[in-house]
Image (tube, rainbow, N blue to C red):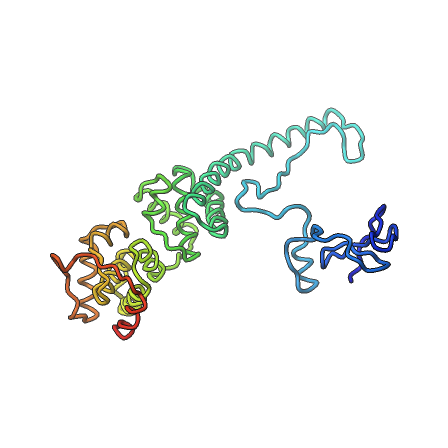
Length: 333
């Protein structure tokens, strides 16, 4: 048992010892030091929320107060010059020093007032977007970091706050591998896709950041959920997407249209068909785009056995037994 703190004015219900109840922080229990009976449990942990595995790491992580948060305009701490009439030792300040401190307070407030007000509006919108799109806190913090860098470089001037915070969130989603398109963010942010794309290009150019290329695998699984496609069909679509990336077909193309075309081809191969209109509606694009990507992938990959189904053959097919489909299509591609 680790050394604990003695708790006064308590009596052991077992042996009747007084003032011998100690706390064990490791187990979270109150224990009698005489007989060892557990008097109480579920003690609140008063230690820090972080872990340290050596002395240097403990020194680096130690702090006073709550942790800093990028989702707060002032990082969760607020510091300002006080307008007190006394100094640190409790002595009265002279009128000249009091006026000097008042001037310093006004200068400090004016220097941070516009920045804090801007951050307060932007982070309020970021909080709304995060809640509406069900994004993790890590992505929101990264978006806040992008926006703060833009604010320091004076990139917000002349541009809308909503557009810049939405662009920061889109780049954060790209960095954290979240399958969201530019159109998804623009719809939820009430910003046009044209304006959002302009803000994204501005951030990339001035912050010299390189967003990760969209992963078609995540988009394929997202579309597969919306279209109620089985896992074998999605697996074949992922293999087709890997082939298209290796052949360089994806360069300069919309990742969502490539994922939709791969999913359409996989549905034709497995018999679990969806119409181009259904896939285009889920991918938020047009059937013409799906058809063009489909023809390009089929031509370059040499899939001569794939053809567009029309008429009664194009009716959607829903698989009732995915396991049977998996056993029949495991060597399909």
